[in-house]
Amino acid sequence: MPTFRTSALVLRAYDFAEADRVLVLFTRSLGKVKGVAKGVRRSASRLNGCLGWLSLAELQLAGQEHRELYRITQGQLIQAYPKLKDSLEALARASRLAEILFSLTPDHQPLPEIFELAETALNLLDAGVSPALASVWFEWLFLERMGHRPQVERCQDCGQAGDVLAYHAQHDGVSCRACRTQGGLTLSAGTRRVLAKLISGHPAQLPRLCLSAGNETEIQALLDSVWRAHLGRPLKSESFQRAVHELG
Ligand SMILES: [Zn+2]
Image (tube, rainbow, N blue to C red; front, side):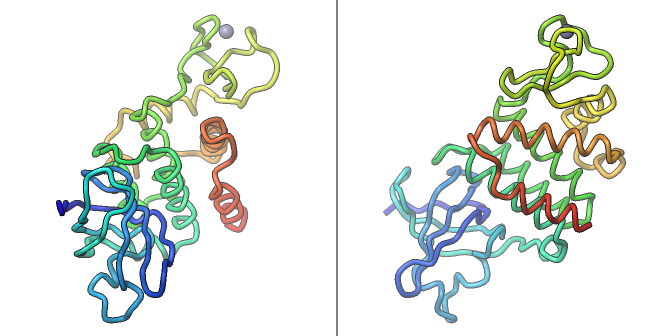
């Protein structure tokens, strides 16, 4: 049986049979796949400790390529992101990241650029960078690289680029007040400048980027609306993240 070695992020885990666990993995070289870890719930299992939720591990998977379920035969923990799990806000943001990868990446399609993006975002969250900034950076770049980023630079009707524009999910773009007078989510010129910097900037520059409360509110509403349009429902982690935000 062929075997594959790949880095993998654990997106979901389900207990199965007496001591097994089925995991949904986002892997660097095979894309999103499912794997079964036989006997992992026994304390003596060598896979124990590397397959926790949102852990990054180097795994050996056995099985024919594209099969429904690989067998996880070896594993070594690379990063467990322990600090991320100490902060409710960072945890809420990480759970959005996991749900986006789970719900919006195709099975069995390697997306190494998206894998690196997710890994960098988790490192930023774990390093204590503003969770909101790390999260919107990941989500906006995910949309860009998957070819789903809405055009927010200029009015899609007249081409006007200044002042306040409104995002309309049903048109997947923005319009000025003169062209479309009703509805839509406000996107100020300042917020659109932040979005442009998120796309063009290096992640190392992120801590220096200023995300005001107003920018954050507008970008969050935009992203939530985009995910709702793609999924036909809100992200499940949206309400968790909002509750944490209101607590803070
Ligand atoms: Zn216009």
